[in-house]
Amino acid sequence: MFGLIFALICIVPNIYLFFRIRKVFIGTSYRIWYALVYLLLVLDYPINNLLIEGNFELKYNLISLVARYILPYYLYVFLLMLLFDSFLLLNRLLKTVSTDTLKSLKFRIIAFSALLIVPLGIDVFGIFNFNNIQTTEYKVVVPRKSARIDHLKIAFVADFHLKERTDIHFVERFADKIAQIQPDLMLFGGDIVEGIGEGKKLDRIAKMFREIKTKYGVFAVLGNHEAYGVQRKGGFFDRAGMTVLSDSVVSIDHAFSLAGRLDNKYEREPIGVLMKSASDSLPAILMDHRPTDIVLNSKTAVDIQFSGHTHNGQLFPLNLILKNFYPLSWGYRKVLNTNVFVTSGIMLWGPPVRTVGKSEIVVVEVEFK
Image 1: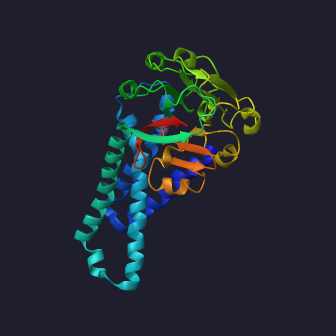
Image 2 (image 1 turned 90 degrees about the vertical axis):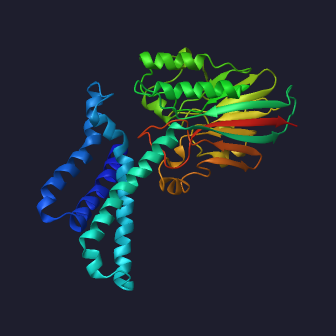
Image 3 (image 1 turned 60 degrees about the vertical axis):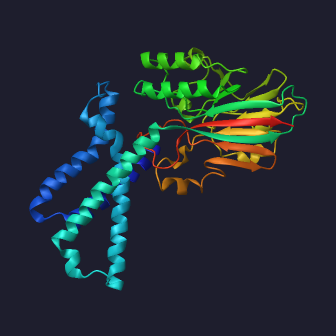
């Protein structure tokens, strides 16, 4: 079903784009060349995926390079074409620009150049934005109860989507930032690794994660992509030194309870049943990969919830659409007595372009009172 929806999302706008660009900007003598070039670019992404599945080395291949960035580029060409067509429709009523001007070669060259160049500039911005790891800092106060500590510094990330093609230098920059932050507790909120989590590069990444030193440990939950790759405990997570919480709760140093929910792609316990395992005398922290059950979770003893999954839409204007699907698609909100944090993710599953949001490490300074 996902593959069908994704195909329709790609095909329908491309049909519109192909015929509108052809009609408005392409002269009769150039239409065969236009059709060939357009078809080649449209097919680049699926061809690249087929080659990857066939284990072809594509690291320095032009097909792979174009495929990484073509989808967001086409998105913004599509949106600009819609904007241009809206202008043409409005101009029929207002007559702001004359028909002779619209049909002139100069106008068409300027409009067509903008249609191709502006999305390229947006793509370039999105590439730089994705590769710029940023820290978002919060401070919250929660009831101390019988906790032996009065302060806790938490670093939280989600959505690494690690695989053998992951840029190792990006992960190195992440590890350096965590070393600078020096958190008391390191949390990974799901969608950490793709597939079976095996390979030389993933071994190197696991070693980097294992070197993260905190006072209270490094914990993780599983996301929907671990479910697709049939990941549970063990494997990559053991090599990375992460304790995976799969519908389980741990009490840490008589300071706080930490709960981890399975993603809803797995069979999981209701949140009320899970939180019965948490100590009533300690502050409770919950990792739940998707921020779908925020209201339900807030009706339990959870003081702090961490979630990811949304990527904050990744590409404008998808972030605006996403706000209608989740109670909180990114940022911080207090729901009843629960402090909820949703990260836009440290990396991405699809094209390495982020035109909205940021590649984010969430740092929360918790004061127990």
